Image (cartoon, rainbow, N blue to C red; front, side, top):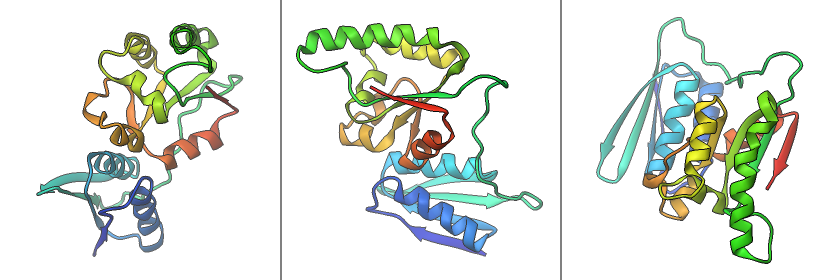
Amino acid sequence: MTKEIDCRGLACPAPVLQTKQALEKEQPNAIKVVVDNEASKQNVSRFMESQNLEVTVLQEGADFHVIGKIDEGTVPETPVAEKPEAGHKKIMVMVANDRMGHGDDELGEKLMVSFLKTLKEMGEELWRLVFVNNGVKLTIKDSDVLPVIQELENDGIHILVCGTCLTHFDLLDQKQAGETTNMLDIVTAMQLADKVINI
C-alpha cells in the first residue's frame, strides 16, 4: 500500500509533520508526498531517510513527488540525535540574526564574527548550531563568517539552517554551509539539548 499526501501550499514544518504522522499511524510500505518548494523537498527527503526509507524524488512542473519505500525487515524509527561522550553537556546555540545586539549595526556585525570565531572554545560541548530568521544570511556565499561556519561544520558540529527562512529571503540556492532543516528538527534538538543559548 502506498500512502499519498498532498502538501502543496503548506509551510514548514507541516509537510514533515504530516509525513511523520502517516508513517507512525498507518505504517505504509511506501509513501508519496507532493510538495511545491525546494525547502520542503529537502526536509521531507531527509526525514524519510532518517526513517530508513529508500527515497526517490521526481519533479513534475513546479511540484516535487518525494517517494519513500520501506525495505522488507526495516522498521521506521524516530531519529535519535547522536550523543556526545559521557560527561559532556549538549549545548545548542540558536543564531536568529546576522549581527549581535542592537544599537550600532557595524559593531553588531563585528561582534557576531568574533562570537562565531570563539564558539570553538566550547569544545566538545558545542553540539548544534542553528540559524533561523536573519541568521541564515551568515551561511550563504559572500558571508564574512562563512569560512568560520564551514570550519565548525568540518570539525563535526551539526549545523542546521531554517529552510523556511532561506526561502523567505530567496537564499535557498546560496546556502554554503549546514543542512536545510525545519521546525520539527529544531524543536527536537531543543528538547535533547542540555542547554540552549539564543543569540
